[in-house]
Image (tube, rainbow, N blue to C red; front, side, top):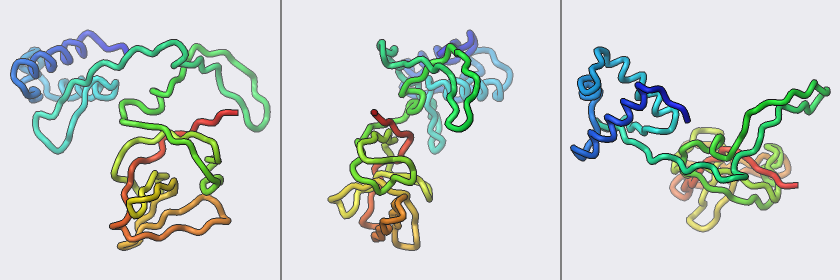
Length: 200
């Protein structure tokens, strides 16, 4: 991903400072090291580098700027040409574009894995038997997210997640199926769904 000359200087400074000292620089040290007068300018550059997947920041600790290793270059076949948009209703005029799309565009820098779906409990979300779900590895989820949940340490299931007091409701998206109610202590979130792939 393209970065500006100044962003590269900021990235190089953070990298060399961290290698020399064993910890990352503060915003003040970045400003001094690069002769920048404004901490807001440093914050803007760090935010842009973070958004481009080149830096990682932890908001719960000081000196929390980490330089991420560069992503490996996409091998042939990993990126597909995005040839435009297609109507699922009335036909629209087709236009060629030069965009491409890859799994990395969906996943970003997140720790992710894929699972093949078995069963029809999520069919009203258009997730059906044989589909592949792309899952971000995480142990937390927000209300209503589609999650991979480990129940009673033995079974995993794909459902929408809801907390109801001390109980978790794992809600299927299939009107013919009942929700699963489990004590919160017996449910472990293993990931949340980022996207779906289907082969025909």
